[in-house]
Length: 87
Image 1 (spheres, rainbow, N blue to C red):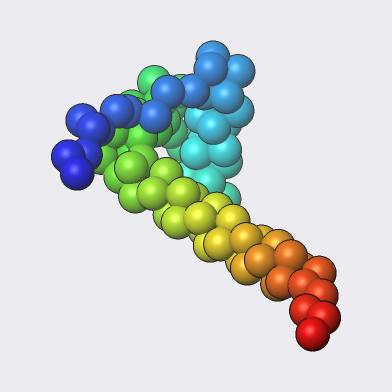
Image 2: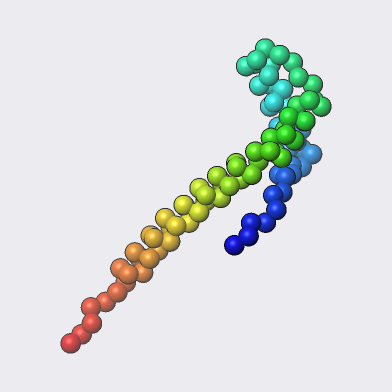
């Protein structure tokens, strides 16, 4: 099965604003450096474009595992409804 072409993760303006603020806080608190909004947004764009797919795929994998676990639970519950056949 052929994979669809990679798409860059897109954020709303509000999400971008909040993420940029977090990047700026990280640089200030952890690196003791200031970073402007534009460089922070460029960094966000870099991560969204270059490694965003890995985060997205990890989320899909984790969700898939939850669904499989729930399906096993449902299958057990359904089999638990089985009645003994009369002879």
